[in-house]
Image (tube, rainbow, N blue to C red; front, side):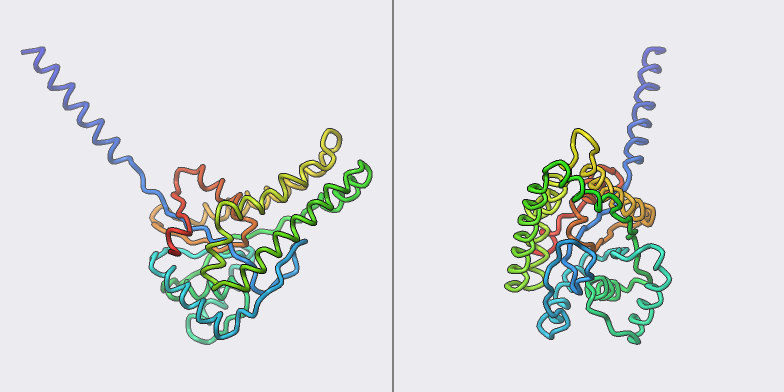
Length: 272
């Protein structure tokens, strides 16, 4: 009898432990990363895309179609590429837009971000950007000249201009939905990140590592953006959409993939 009681106690304990572990299976927030081109060309990047007229009726129709598809996610939050310290200003503009008292500017932050947030009936749109100056950039060309590595920067320039030309052709030939699907493919995301990893990282290697430090500036900014993202997501948020320049997406994707609080949603599963 004692043996049977011991077995019974063990089974009850095992059932309790199994049940407890089941209850601790935590909810993961789904997060959809949308890499975009900059509609208004802000002239902040070394290599930029020549913009289309995104206020034209054809493009406005495409934006409506795009945001109607994204609306189906029932996202709890929409995050955009605006500095965190501009949150109050963005709140004011978004509130005015929600009341039909503000006309959207050409920026994709508003054309996609504001438009989508309003369709989702969100009271707030989240700013998660932060700007870190690329403080080592000015030393890269100097070091390249000193170390006879200017050929690397020339190769970078050719590759970057070809990349921009490719996206420019895609932009002219496709709808906005088509553009986003294309530039968010694994191949295109890798092409963007490789501009830093294939070229910049070589400059000064073995001596002053200016190229690697320049790449670290870019990673630091994206790590800070990532910090802003994860601190603005609540445990009860089921779905979040992030709208950011395409160049940021490969790093942000890597960071979020390695945080088990989140489940990344591939854009091509949403924009079918």
